Image (cartoon, rainbow, N blue to C red):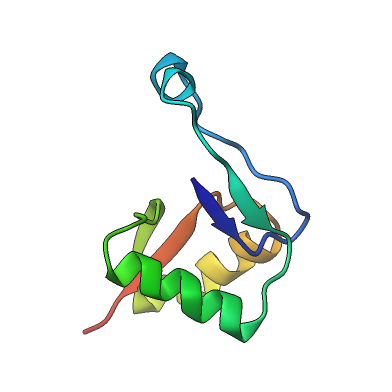
Length: 83
């Protein structure tokens, strides 16, 4: 499980007995450089890690989503659907 960039350095983890029995490894950073972000994107592109998308919205909802991210109410990542 990989976390890249977190406003407060904390994350709510969806841990269960299965993930613990698989000897889960947690890697993360509070902030990340452009290089670290590029490396994370490459890992996603290669299918080595899978991002957790907790919300999909239309572009019209972008302002509301950005506010929820700033208020730290949005776990995971939000994706906007482009027209």
